[in-house]
Amino acid sequence: MGKGAAMGGLEVDIAGKAGSFAVSARFTAEPGVTALFGRSGAGKSTILKMIAGTARPDEGRIVADGRVLFDAAAGIDLPARARGIGFVFQEDRLFPHLSVRRNLTYARWAGRRAAGRPLPEVVALLGLEDHLDRLPGTLSGGERQRVAIGRALLADPRILLMDEPLSSLDRQRRAEILPYLEAVAGETRIPVIYVSHETDEVARLADRVVAVEAGRVRAVGSPAEILGGEEGGETVALLEGRVTGIDPHYETATVDIGGARVELPAPGLTAGARVRLRVRASDVAIATRPHDGLSIRNQLSCTVERVSVTGSAADVLLALGEQRLVSRITGKSADTLGLAVGQEVVALVKAVSVERARLMRPDETGE
Amino acid sequence: MTETETAIILLSAKVAIAATLCALPPAFAVAWLLARRRFAGKGLLQAIVTLPLVLPPVATGYGLLLLFGTQGPLGRIMEAVFGLTFAFRWTGAALAAGVMAFPLLVRPIRLSLEAVDRGLEEAAATLGAPRVIVFLTVTLPLALPGLLAGAVLAFAKALGEFGATITFVSNIPGETQTLSLAIYALLQSPTGDAAALRLIVVSILLALGAVLLSEWAGRLIQRGGDGQRGGDGRA
Image (cartoon, rainbow over the protein chains, first blue to last red):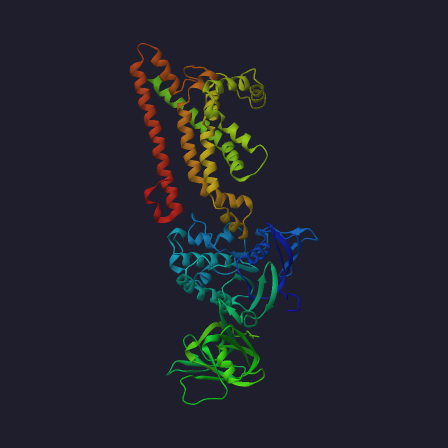
């Protein structure tokens, strides 16, 4: 990132311990979603708690929106209640004795926070219209977590902290709530720190990724840079581009990726929208020249950047303009094709195997 | 029911209510310490709180007499500072009842405080609520069923207290003669059986009423706390 946090940004430079586990982190977060990404037990949640003020670093500084929240040298350590945050926990932590409405507005009537956003707006964003007068105990897990997100949004936060908000939900509930998180991510004007170990969540939500490993920041970069690679034992690539055309008859969309054109099924896409696409390495085949008479809609000219062979499989890293695509073929195929670094090849990708990872904000520049 | 009997019932109610209400705040404070704090001597405090439960009530009453009697050190202080006399007064009966009921009050409150999810308090703090507000809006409402259960138990205990009361403030009709003491006195006289029986029936009704009241209040709270699930109403 290089530069300090701009106005409205978050600046973290801390070191501390959680039990005997040492954590240190240094990164900045602009308005938008920054994912703290890493395995369970990597220290992501501890870093988040230190930002929130529910855990205390031993040294360092935390500045949000120009306001010092923590400064060990200066002896500043604002309590959690004074940090102007919104926090979404792994478990919803709704107040069981209060109605959804009272839960949502808790920061206002109990925390004396300013009424930043109108309640109806947040209620509509999270689809909670029909639940306002119910008690949390009568809601489903997904609904409860949506209320928890709304409660944090309505705290008029300068930073929004989310600690694996989907981890307590099953797959179906997770799929049900992700669109709401996308909506929140899409309209936020504040830094959102999103802790997760799920690559698909990060790919769908994050603008930037801070990779955390063994209590330290391993890398900071775009989702494509950090996530392009392993994903739950599977290698994937993330591509970003703009929708240039929709074919209404076949319901397919064409996305321009740095000059290359990728076709995929259109649902949810409109011309001009910026999108992030996800392509599994095992869905990408390689040809040494373009072919006719194939059902495969996407034939992308790429340059071989690297061939790494593990056992019988070979992962071929392909440069598609500025972006990277990975193809997993057998070592045997790699040898038969005689793949060499710098070689021009054609990547073959079926349109149906291109997934939309994320719709991005119109003002987002992607890389 | 004679006028004397009505007076006895009213006095008993007064003593039991005063004992419960006065014991509630310190009991809550002690329960809070035991549930939430770590400190040296916690085990000792726990033991002292339990003492009235395991000590012979007569011993507790005698201890109160030594401490709060007219010549007792605390008795003199209370007299001088607040103008409050305990010896042979109904206030002494309330004190004895309150002390005897104290452990019964502490335990359920402590358990309910321990059952309150600290994560909810943390969440309230991240939403900007100061500690006192977190306590009033989250901790206290969630601990209310335990508080209520403790209060009912303490009230019932205070209503029936005998040993410590008779040792500390004696058995003075119209001043310290509560239901139990009156029943005891009536059973000592050859003609008192019928009157004693009436008072026993009243005792049963009072205790039953208190328990039913707490069940009902508990159900209200439960409904508030758990939504539509609280149909069975066990607090």
